[in-house]
Image (cartoon, rainbow, N blue to C red; front, top):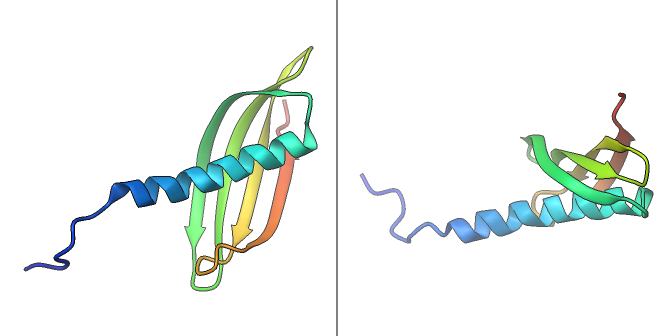
Length: 92
């Protein structure tokens, strides 16, 4: 059984994932502009008909401490228009 006759291009999937990771870092840097990004990781994602949500954990470092923030991005999966971005500092 052949489902699709075209080869699957994984680069398109990777580029889309990188787009949201880059956006998450940008939003974290917007809130904490004097920090340096040490580490970033996707925590989870959820896809529904009219809305997709992705959450990232980003470890930042300023002059005195390292801390983590959670960045949650809600967007329309068809147009990729961002509905809402939430940046919350992790409790230590």
